[in-house]
Length: 215
Image 1: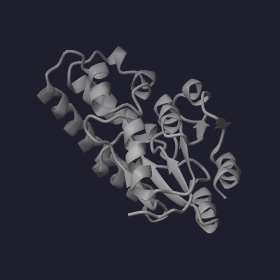
Image 2: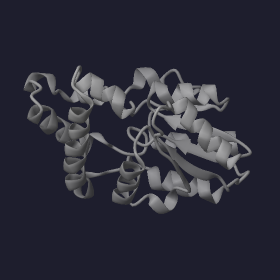
Image 3: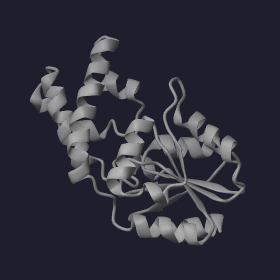
Image 4: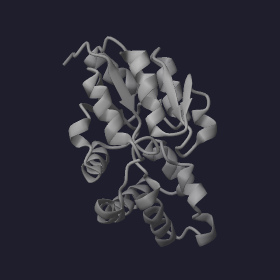
C-alpha cells in the first residue's frame, strides 16, 4: 500500500503518550514480585528503559534470567498496565489538536514504536487517538527502529517524511532513513532528544515544524 502523501511519524511513549502514569507503577509492582529489591525499582530506573525493545529492557530489569522468566514478566506487567490504562492513560497536552492540524494540511500520521501491535493499539484506544493515526508500525523481532521505520517508509512511499520522538532510537532511525528528526525534550530522555535536527519543549511546537517540513 503506497500513499505518496507526506507522512509524520511519531514514537508513542514519551512523545504522544504519558506512559509513566500507568506503566511505572505496573513495572514497580512486577519488579518487586520478581524479587528485585524495592530500592532498585525507582521511577528513573524504569523510565530509562522506555523506548527499548523488550528483549533489551528485560536484560536491564532481570539480567541473567532465562527467557521464560522474562516472558512471564512481560505478561504480568502487561496485565497490570491493561488494568490501569483505561483510567490512567493520558496524552500530552495538544496532541489531538496537532494531529488534526496535520490532517487538515494533507499530512498522514503514523506511529512507529518498539512495542507490540497489541500494546500500541491498546494505548491509542485508551487515549482515544486511534482515529487520528493513519498507520502503525510495530516492533518486528530481530529488527531495530532504524529497520522498522524503513519498513514503514518502504510500504507507504511518502513524498516526504519526518520522525518525531524522545529517544536516541528515534533520532538514529530518522538519520538511517534520511528523514529529518524532531526531538521531544518534554519526553523521557531530553539529553538524547537534543541530538535531533529540531527540538521542541511542548507538543504545540511540533506542528509548525512539521508543516514547514512536510507541507
